[in-house]
Image (tube, rainbow, N blue to C red):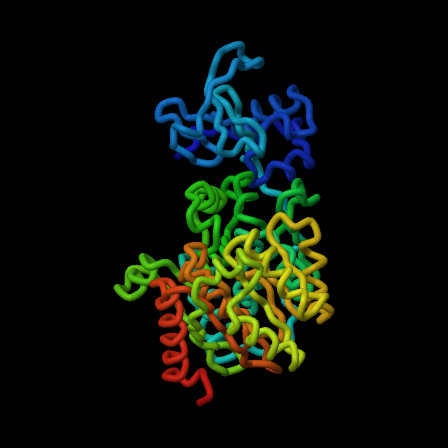
Length: 471
């Protein structure tokens, strides 16, 4: 969707634009009511050519300008108090404020705010593996050439460190960078890591409820949902965990990524599990990509073991679990090994927790809506909790040095190939503890289980072939 022709910037030198308005709107698309300025001041900046108004709803094809949805089921009518007419509004992005037919989205088209450019912004004394070095060079080239690149790296390969050189190149040349991820947990983990290695660069962390919403920064770490507020903002767009829910299935979030980029910009995707279509495009040479098939510590990825556990749900309904699951857990509790165990549903997880607590009272469970989610994960990190039961919310973005991993009910539809590869990737991530047991307890093997194991085995073979894994 192309923006309308812009009015020429005013040559009236007596007009001084509001710097606060500039910083708040630069690279953004916001509603009038989101701006703490009078309508008169906003309109004056528009007349002078510093602001662009775009219609919130495209009436010709009934689409939302902010979130891009064209599905008519998301549009509803209401009597608008602003214009007095009955008109359409978009309910898909309603949580960010109502966009209707007479609602303008306001963007800044005047001079961009400047940054304090630092010639060498990166402070990091770490070392990259050979696989990471190759990927790091490719990322830096994509940044320099404003091109697109897929970084296909196994879980635990050190994708974040691979970005440092490319981001440093961008920041040192005045470019604006965004690292986007589908999940708030990952934003909260990445923001302090980037601030530590780029100490002189202003960084904002954006997620639902964050206080940085109106900050203007050269480096932004954000959930993909937050990108709906941006418009042609970033010279470098990096999308981490591109296979993760909800980004992988939500076209609105994919639209937000594209809309928040400048017309000439870099787009770098990171994932351990590209979808089947992307894998095919890589094989056929239709997508530019680089692989990191091995972890930085040069040990192979743990290959999941499939263990049949019968009709575990039927047993669970009677307050029991299959004996092989109980023995697996007891053996590790005896050795003092921490466990991360995944269950397909919260209801099942709650019942499993009751059984497990008979073995150890400090075992805990966590799920997406758990109000104590952050505290429970922290206790697990601190080794205060021997076993943490979880849903798929912890399949990625969490690194615990020395754990074994299990899935109870891996045949469930919630455990896709991507999810299972990520779950297996929780084990053996640290150089001190590079191995770990991964067990999928099941009531029948699925294609997702077989594909996940096949992908892990293939990456291990590629890593050995390239000399990145010690045999």
